Structure formats: C-alpha cells, structure tokens
Image (tube, rainbow, N blue to C red):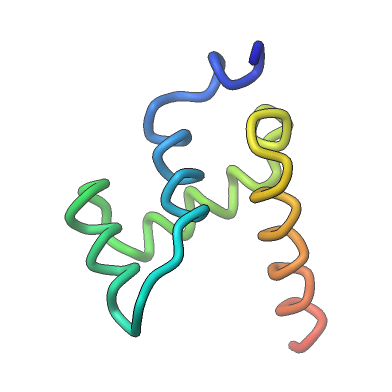
Length: 78
C-alpha cells in the first residue's frame, strides 16, 4: 500500500499491537513496555494521534475505525 510505506515503523508496530488480543489485565501494558519500549501513557498519546492520521486509516481501516468508535463512545460517556 502506498500509505503504509509512509507510516513509520513505530506507527505500524502500534497498529499491529492494537490488532492483537490480550489475555488479562496488565498484559497489554507489559507488551507496550517490552515490545515497543514505551511507557503506556506515551503509547496512548501516540495511538490517539495515529487515529487522526489519514495514513493510518489507509493502512489499517478496520483497526483504526474500530478504535475511533471506541474513542467516540468514551467521549460520549463523559
């Protein structure tokens, strides 16, 4: 894909991590630290920015649209 080539490796890794399922509490945060070398707070900042990036949408529309719906539902709850 043309857009995927434009995403950096870290952005592709973040989307790949979001596609996975995690068995229990803390497992995702552990994967964020161990596999990406990021603090969870920084990871979620980057993920949130990525959801607004048209390159991410072009690269992985299913994941990005799912996460956008989750984000919007949380905003509506507040």
